[in-house]
Length: 311
Image (cartoon, rainbow, N blue to C red; front, side):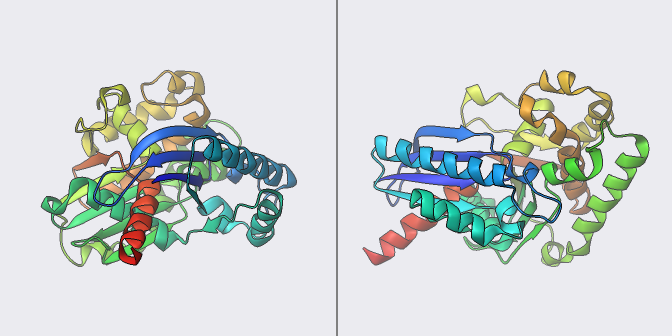
């Protein structure tokens, strides 16, 4: 069947059209996305602004047209931390539903971590053993670990790269004090619940996924996306640690010229790097393998599993 997966993230709205059936890897057929930046369309009280609501509604309406044009039998729509954390999230989603007919499901942080873990497990398979998975988004960091397809532990922390960039670097380039304060907050957040994952011992395999980790791996020497998803890519802690002082001093223009960095995400590179380094350090990981599958694939795989059971 052909499915449309509508992912409303903190940075981007992304419709992925895939050809999928049970027992096979979802095959991407078409991609449509817009930089919604919903996390930046929040009022002081934490509400999505009218401008943000209009942008989300317009994108959803156009995504529905694209999905229909591409022959999708169904569309799975979900939102993550930017909508999840907004104080008016219910009203926003009802507005979108009234205008477009699309019902967007808000994923909890735990579900986001769980579904990402499912995608990574299916990608690497059982040979990965006990698996640990990390995903830095715009609004949150997801962590999950376990030996099965469902993780034993899965949780979400409010230290996404975009959120931290707004909190600490909103007034311009970070100084030493801002970097120190950010580093301290990140490490305290991760360490507080680190025992969830560490209690079972070191994982057999540690993986990372999504745009921030892919960009950091590319900066640190991983193969470009043009080489295809089957090329192994890793992020090494010591290489990343060497890069961080250089990243801190670079202008947005210089950051945008680094391999794998989108101009619209330059402000997220430094906080994302600090989160990645902290996670690797606190969990004692020298290397993270980059997985090309992430949350969207997890949503698709769970849907296919449900269809298989019902069918």
